[in-house]
Length: 281
Ligand code: ADP
Image 1 (cartoon, protein in one colour):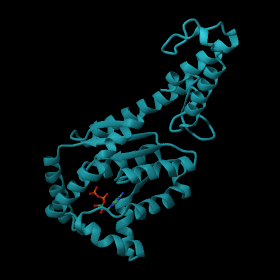
Image 2 (cartoon, protein in one colour):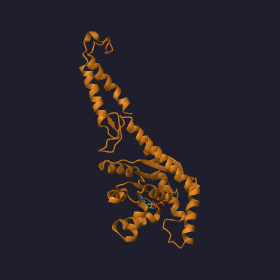
Image 3 (cartoon, helix red, strand yellow):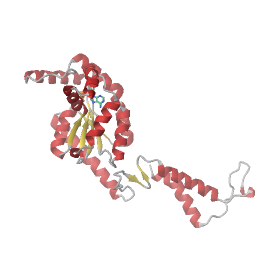
Image 4 (cartoon, protein in one colour):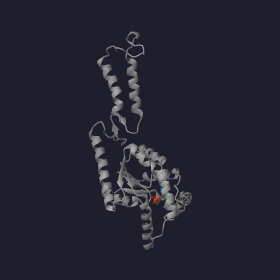
């Protein structure tokens, strides 16, 4: 199972990711954690990311994409993963699609945790208080000023991903304001529904999943591939060219008045070509 958790800072992505790890035995890949580890270790990536993160801005796409690409190729991610904090921009989402397609994989679901922005500020303040009480060291970006910048970065750069994934049909929106248990149950239901829909598409025959690529197939067209559509258009054009036309059978505006009889085979072919694009939607 491969899931993306989407939501602003403080939406509860980390908490829910941990629940999913226990439930499904898959790994949590948090780019925030990976970058913090790089900063702590003083690696070249960490040195580049340190100040950007402390300001609440986003680390450049190419750095984060390289880290994720490397991470999802590791053996423990084979069974599946939950991406928490990635993708955060549309180019990152497009890079993830390419990364997965190269491996013949796709996402099972993108879960959006919807939350009230005013309450987020209170949630983070509570988190900071609890960490202080436990004597844990605070993240340099866990303060009200930087939080505002993190929320602004989310609104400007990450929120457009909701439409990106809605367009792909993989988005599941959950009310993130409910209790941790209720949010976890809602995510469970959303994932079961996503799995059911994939299963029923598979059973429908035409929508069988291509086992080698892992891509969903609808009719003759693999989702995400434009090739078969071209093929269909090409066939339609060829069928139109085959259609005999004479001056006598044309009206003034050049449209066929009474088309000469076509052979049954030709008729079937061109009908199919015209119908196919609708089947591929
Ligand atoms: P939050 O608690 O705000 O959701 P994270 O722990 O996920 O934050 O990330 C902390 C910081 O790490 C971000 O504010 C950003 O600077 C950087 N970061 C994490 N993931 C990404 C990403 N996918 N792209 C760019 N920057 C990222």
